[in-house]
Length: 417
Image (tube, rainbow, N blue to C red; front, side, top):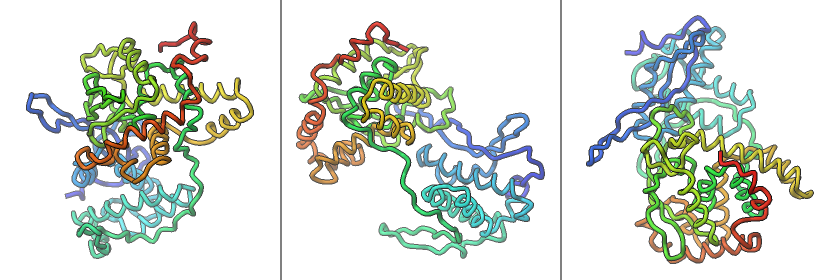
């Protein structure tokens, strides 16, 4: 089946890459067509910059079709990285086609990642993908050098089984993470102040992430109609689902996809949510008929990529402000934030951290993060008021009113971009 369609070229004209396509997934009762974002493996003509979907994509579609786009993309990137390694080293590996793949090639690739200084998690993740990929090759009889007998079966607690890795990989040592997952609580008001000045389009989204635990893909998929109801406490309930506003754009980051559709509660802290929501609805209205809550400068639904670009601008401005106007502790924080990696996901991490400090059980954290279904977590509802008050108390001494002094100092220079 695959003998004539997956050759390893003798030239350096091609490389494997990952691209995105949208397919018709299902039709709603009202006739609306729902699309699904899919990751595909392509063979790229480097000289012409042209991509052609490669038949090896069948591995992704057959194994991960029902999985999220992010999961598909992760495995597709790992396979593409492995195949590019084979292409680059085909002579030293003595291999001319996929049919000649052996277990030793997988081991050498994993050890190459370790030699290149990749982190332990990266190597382990690549090994999991490679194991499943080799199992798929064996099941489809693509290479005579690999059979299912090479993969020991191991039982799981759920009564199923998984295939154990057959590779003899050398793993890198564990190192301290250079990724920052939690934003310092004391600086959250200042972050909002600066965001209102330089990136007002995502201020409400930033609030949803810090006080609702939303992922960036969940933020940009919100419709105005997703704001379901205000609660007696002032908290807001939103409906999170994939709306696929921008099927015209191939967003390879996968950030336009909702991992877990669900209702989600956004905490009202002081009266910030009321003001931010009112300002946002008045200033940023969709012009493309999508009904999207977050829009770009053209009035079209904002993509995850665009949201991240606004967030990166906010990061740079925040760090610059600390360095220029802050005291010694502020400058130390600025140096830390400039040498570590942190992204929009820090909002969800910070929200989790605030909850964990006051949690009485794992459910206290799992439910507001959206990790459990609403039906199975109704017992949590009586505790949400206590949790919200704890968060308010933590921030109370930092803000006396909604419009901060920084806004007053910069009100004549506010950038609505």
